[in-house]
Length: 315
Image (tube, rainbow, N blue to C red):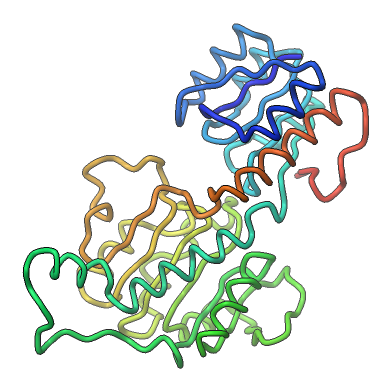
């Protein structure tokens, strides 16, 4: 069987699973385009695509009539045309819980670095300066954290934040109640009481640009915005404008609407923004978990065995 990996590498335990099942992996350069995925699919006629950094759309499916499964190397499936796959009988899977702890830790790291102004202070010391009269850092204890999305990652973020003395509220109509997290009925209520706003929800047509100029204006002055979920959740032009006016104190972004963002993107080098290259879940443990779970799904489908129901994606 032939398996396309839309990235240049895969954790060795996952490689071992696929090869032991008789599979051959075909790697791609980082962040291939949809056209490049379709071209490779036409060339090798894959039985499976392990989707990590490149989109899998109808063109790739057209190019590979033998395609039976698309396994996401992660949790989000916005890079896969799930509706089209389902229409064709192609199984789509994901790896829930594979990087929960890693993403939550990254979220807290961005929060702490912004609250303590670490990038700026470090650059000042490196440049020969020292503490100035106007230098100040913020207390994290006592800040109000607002979560949009209270699934597995949001709940771990809440637990870590509580250890720093933060109060936690959340807006998520779909999630179950969680101890220690106060739930609010509307997004507007949450925004009004969030010194720190953190996003933990999927990118869907209904959530694209969920946070725009109007929503950012509802946050308390000096708020911090964190996004380790999907870039399209935030209107980046509106975020930039809110930072420029001083309405926001800072933003921590692990994701962008277009990845990688263009070199001249105004948020890449903004003095009050910390950017990381979509690596929140890319720890050693996270990579192994995501790769193994995706490989298990591919092997199960191609052997005619059941896939754990929580890993199946349907529309």
